[in-house]
Length: 484
Image 1 (cartoon, helix red, strand yellow):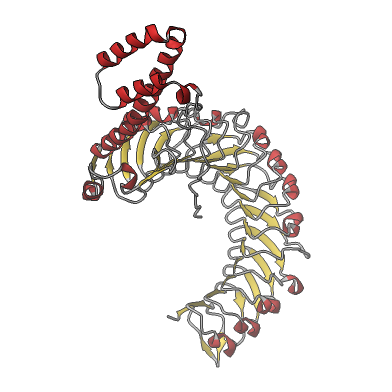
Image 2: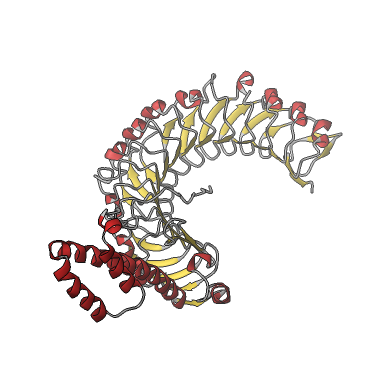
């Protein structure tokens, strides 16, 4: 599944210091004279001589005036220094790239042009400081130098889909305005910096690297954590949700995580997406998952769980996608699953689930149904198959019996239908010819009788597997036939 991650543009509290207008600047010509001296290139000694002269003229206000001037001078110098620092940080970033389309940066990063016009660089209009770097998919190779931590106004850093190596600089944790870090699909190694000081960090995407996730569960502002495909090992902290109450997306798929999913996961009460498939989790699925009343997508398959589907899942009224494929589940599929009206995807592929399918359902939004490679039995009751939005269904490799329901012909959106490796008998329903099927597989069943001519009127068909027991005009039909 592809997830799209926006670059947020909220204004940051980090702003340049602006001194309030002081009445003294309007009434005292001495101050104006000192400012002219200061900004017109006169030396400090000349300024001091002028100040000494004025000391005797206006002694009561001298020290206040002097402090005001020095403060103004400091503000001007710091503003210029900060912009120079941004430029130096970007030049250091460029120097760390050892291969890739460097000519792009050489051509577009001209010292004679404002850094805000450089490719991949965005600045704020108010202070002309660097707020975003975006170099996704540039195929850069190299490392990231600590100097990147000097971009103090940076809110978004996207270096995804490159070939950066080495560690992620700890200096990133000092960027208090940072909201998004997207380093997915690189080759970073080592520990993830502690982003506890990044009080605005909302999205941390480190998918497909080789990182160690120390310190990610103390980022109080975090909303999405993407750490899939990082070879993460050991287990999850039991108190992982104590400091990340705003978390809406937790993506830990394709790692080596083991142990049990913490019961206290319910404390991540804002969770919308939970992706933990392809790990080594064991034990039973915690019933507390059913307390995540905002959960919309749950992917926990390809693990080593024991037991069945938690009954608490019935409480997830917002759940749209439920994937438990290859999760070593046993028992029956609870009937309430087929009455969760919000569900769009049900995936129980490759478990050890048994029993019959329920006679009644309320799944008006169901689009995909994966029940293959289980031990499901019984007949498919004809009247229940009226899923108006279903486009993909696989019931292969079970122990279903009886006839294939004629009501399958009412599944007007169905494109893919797999019923092979069951114990279906009888004739192939001619009603299937009403569908816009792309693939149809009913092989390795006990079907008999002629093949309906309506099947050959399906103009969209690309793969057709009917089985050797079917006969057409007395001739055996091949087990597999493809239409291109």
